[in-house]
Length: 367
Ligand code: GAF
Image 1 (cartoon, rainbow, N blue to C red):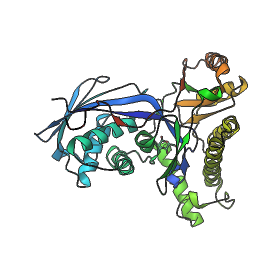
Image 2 (cartoon, helix red, strand yellow):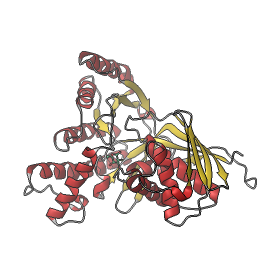
Image 3 (tube, helix red, strand yellow):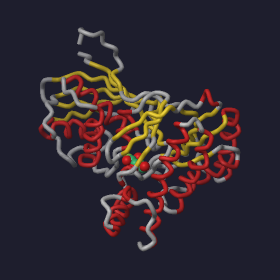
Image 4 (cartoon, rainbow, N blue to C red):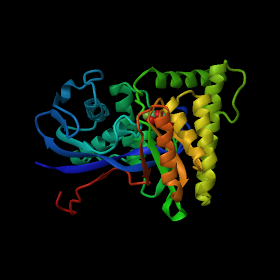
């Protein structure tokens, strides 16, 4: 029996990188690209997961779900069911068919989209009513404790809370949100995305190492989180001082970009995007040559600003460009990549799209 279809988008972060696990600010948009799950309840206590993009079918008994017991992409699905059950929600067996078009391994949060779609599907079809912020926290818990990736809460929040034609300003400490209009076409602008194809691996030591640096710095400075600093501190060991400088400046940039968007001064966010990239390259040290070459080529070709987006170490660059400059910027990046013998990048423009939703519109009273 087909019980329901649920969709959750990937995301692009406009600015506010590596701030979420420091209790800071982020400003993502949801992509039009989604993970789609067709879900049906089962009464045998089994979670059966299949995907149109991957081989094989996983059949897991709910009672066996435990951190470490499941690996690969199925862990993101199983982890959400596990986390919900851990928190006492009555989630039973399910058959889930996963489909989607969020580019994989590109730093566009295909895994958070998978988690969000799973959470929405299994709660709604079980009659468990949880608000979106709670779902964001539970899906983050699934990724932290079940998958073993110590991510912050940005990606899950973007997928669950974002709105069409708006950017989501999120205070990750309070989970307060503001939906700020972000509609580039009427302003004659475009957001050009360059998927560098540089392999992107966050479940490795580098992300966790940055997180440890930040926590150590906060501890040394006697603050609950780096969010609580207004000025970078000079008394730390060099590496920690640079990490702190990035986080403090990046939080300030997010708030500045938010204010520029609120007051309809979109073009003026360009230099702040590029400053963010420079800081991620020099102080936070999470870029790779493909990301730096793309940003340099875009800015040289006339982009108003450009930066890596997401965790770094590969993945995508975003740039704010006049809509008349999209082709020239695309050509410039392709030429720069060819010159360096890098893999040819994918280039496309993104629009701010809707957050996770039920996609089979069941008339009221039928379900
Ligand atoms: C990854 C993480 F999952 C997010 O929580 C965030 O920390 C991001 O990297 C960096 O801003 O996407």
